[in-house]
Length: 151
Image (cartoon, rainbow, N blue to C red; front, side, top):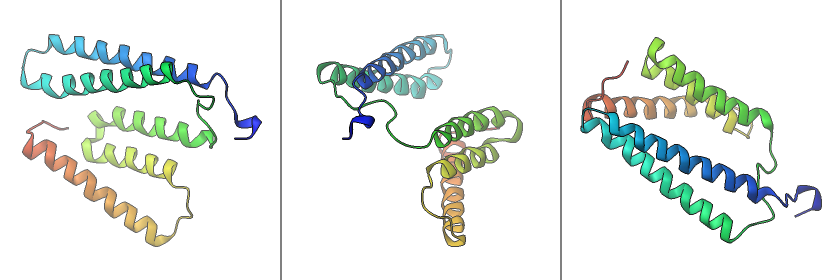
């Protein structure tokens, strides 16, 4: 790796982020103790426990085996910002425009952020179709299989 791309303190950022995820998992796990319905505790508790475990493994691994490289690495900053903005916009839009429409916002923003190849009409149609299929499948799973009330 060339010298200008080395980040000797990159592992510190990974340790901090892993520790933050462990803390957020503990907070989320504690928050589920206030849920009155036992069925509504299952998914958040599962996610919180998995987050604590995976972030804990990451924390221990990075602590025991620090690496010179770390941090964000190379890439364009606008892609990272777009992904975060698209996720927040989708979350904020759910109560106003519904699950499927807000899913389109999140999916489109994430797709634009992740697409490094040249866009062609065929790729746009293929990605739009596969995105719709995935969103409809999630909608059907939550609505009809898991009986989760969706906006």
